[in-house]
Length: 629
Image 1 (tube, rainbow, N blue to C red):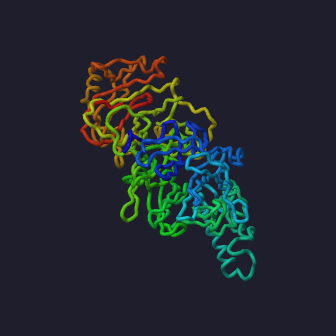
Image 2: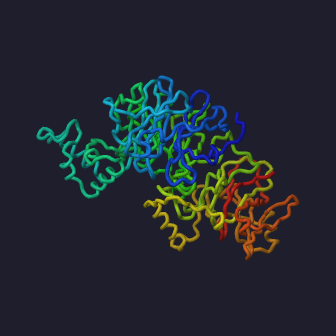
């Protein structure tokens, strides 16, 4: 039984725990993950902290404190940050933490080994133990050591790790290598020369002579990314890329069964072709089936695959969740309902209910990610249907249709042209979750922005409103950290300039596909009290927020945010006597203040989503949404 309501993101709003690996140990569920900095300039800038909750009350999360510091790893400070970890209970009853180190913008994150720390309790102070090593004691560096996940499979400790770039397959490099192997190691030339040993290429010069310029570029990129030599890159008879598994001895460090691919690294013609593995592997065992979840190359989704075996024969199952709801009801990537970007997480059974844990993006980057969760169902045939992202998350039902809620729990936030996250902080303007000090709010809300909350249980609601202010130079969030612009970021900037110059589709705000309509067809009426007062005042509509419970239906209310020539905003504040009051939201002395503006609404009792669509020639910021009976 929950003591209180819980919503997405389910941790404190100043906390950023992405790459979540939830595990039930005893009567509590523990969330392990990376630790981003609020408004950070790169990934994973903070030391590991752990949150836990009773399995019977997922509203009651507590911080267990810092459990492990990057400075405890001998690699520090050459590599300063700890990336996505996982924890497993060993056969000796102790808890083992597996992780990899990286630098700014992920540089160096593919070049190291898998580190290990140990603790007597799930969320105590972990101590550095060592690194995953070969039987001869050297660091295990086969394939790319990245994003380790681990399970105790009835006494067998299995690690899953790796990353995959599809350039080898797309360029034809993999075809050349495998053809070379077939001829030299296994074919007609094998008896004539000693170019290979057990399928491992030894004459790299002969092989390199067969590569075209594109293939050589792929090899050079892998040398730089993975920190390996050309000879090592070309020596793999399969590929250095892909999802990998190995098993460990009881010392939790030494490799017992050597690494191997668990799903195809060549995806064309396989069930993984449209959703190739990228990173973030995680494994769960359901009965006698193994469920492998991962972040796909599409980058905004967690996918899964199923097998009867822990190390082979996996078949793609589908998408579990997308942080832009891409794929839900046929939604296209260009119609995503949020800024999308890296996602990483896992599934977990807590008190008989299955959940998927993932993260969302804030601060216009991939560097400040927050933990979210949704209920999922394992169908009778073992499949998992994609779930939509909501504001309810771990709550036992819809949120109560009454009270003040942080605006930043919005599960949909789009202007119709939201970018896909890149390894940078975007400078281009678009609606986003952000902060100034201890205040967190939705910033850069521009004309046509949709803000959505799913779901509320409405009963006898009379007024809905927002705590709002106009955005200006005094309160605008300006990122002042180091800026790295990658190719995707520059492409999105160019698209924005095209749109602003009128070269893109005129009037487009967000696409009328599935459950979302265009801002030019909101169906807004003029019947509610706010609009009546507005008309009586004889003011021209300039800025307003239409309210919907059915995005394809008519508006149930309108919040007027009009202002006169002096920039004085005349809004819909309701005093106790229900009289309108004029308020100044734009004057310098008021620019940091929030103002509650309400409107009368006509909402049928029941469970509904709540959508706000803003129209206006000035940007606004929204701190809270207000629901009054």
